Amino acid sequence: MANIKDNKLLQKIALVLKELREGKDLTQEEVYNDTNIHIGRIETGKGNINVSTLAALCTYYQIKLSDFLKMVEKIK
Image (cartoon, rainbow, N blue to C red; front, side, top):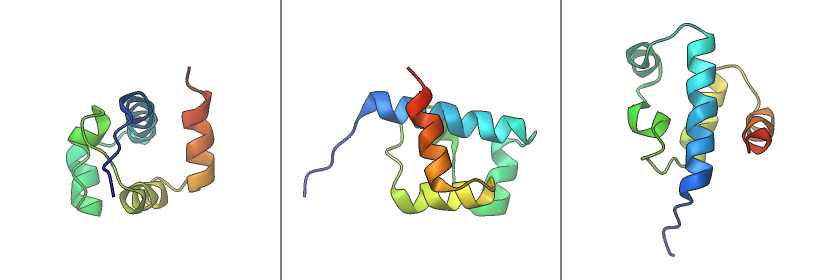
């Protein structure tokens, strides 16, 4: 199976994740301590996040995955 990397999509995901984190006044370190997920590379769009990690972050931020994806879709 080929490893596909859509940089434009990853940038949109990164932006929404960063907005969610900052909206809860959390640092990247606090998110890591709570989830054991390094979000630094994800929030810069350099990490190719997998669905399981994205779902875990959505659960942490108390947002449905479907709502998260709608937020990503709204970004031009």
